[in-house]
Length: 376
Ligand SMILES: C[S@@+](CC[C@H](N)C(=O)[O-])C[C@H]1O[C@@H](n2cnc3c(N)ncnc32)[C@H](O)[C@@H]1O
Ligand code: SF4
Image (cartoon, rainbow, N blue to C red; front, top):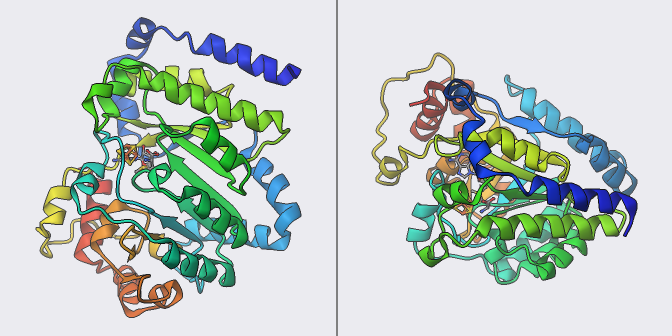
């Protein structure tokens, strides 16, 4: 066994012995409240993930990679919206609207209740051809559970052939078995993001609820943890740093006491540990029932950069103007009958952008931002 691999494995064995009793006592109520009121995402990393990405992608793509990072940074900062790319910088793709979990904070309960829909390979082929021609920079396989898609291997192949530079997979890790890990390692995926939200099995069961309730109390967390470690060992044994592996944790009332133990458990194992703020889904029921008539504007300034940089393509082909699940209620077109390019530059998307430029957002955007800013 290589020395670095051995030290990782030893470290893992040690950190995996985290005692749940200690965890319960380790966080005071005060620090828990502070954490839950945090407005920013907390990223913990011992290495330099941006450099690792650069070392891997620059030799392959040269200036195109530098342009992507510049474009992305400008997009995040550009509150005046001076720059509009002629194609989205990143696309979030939902392959099938199903998940084997219904996490307490997630909108997925609504998705699992909706009619099943899945994108067909023939439509995806057309879409990926457009990604190739328009030189899409980043693709995020996320929303619902991507590894439940029947032809997931085909997706990885198409992403590689389309020469998309930065390719993300967001997963709950339940299907991150050795076969899928090898499939990923044979692809050009750059980032594997596994969501866990807990440091102990008890808390995992409170947040990450399985659709099949018989699986409760079966230590599903241990299986996911082992899969992540197995993936890292396989990757390291190939002498690779990519795909970068991130584990994440959405801080909630039920799990906030495990934030620090979670970071400690993973910080020496993965490339980054991310603690995220919850976006409330409390108003989602009303949204689906379209109970959001235009009301008084509650904020002085409404701003959102998303419609200048990214879109989400849902499993029925509908396109939303942002990464947010709320945007699902603001369809701007459908890739089954239009090109993404036409949708991106089309009337509906233009109206949404103008809404922000004139500080008169669409009712859906208004609701989304008010909930985020006012913590409703
Ligand atoms: C919707 S999931 C889809 C991919 C996959 N099923 C997973 O769990 O990673 C994508 C990410 O959104 C996070 N998430 C879900 N509900 C959220 C919420 N209400 N606020 C913030 N993040 C949330 C999840 O923890 C996960 O990291
Ligand atoms: S696993 Fe992902 S998509 Fe499924 S319910 Fe949890 S956060 Fe939502």
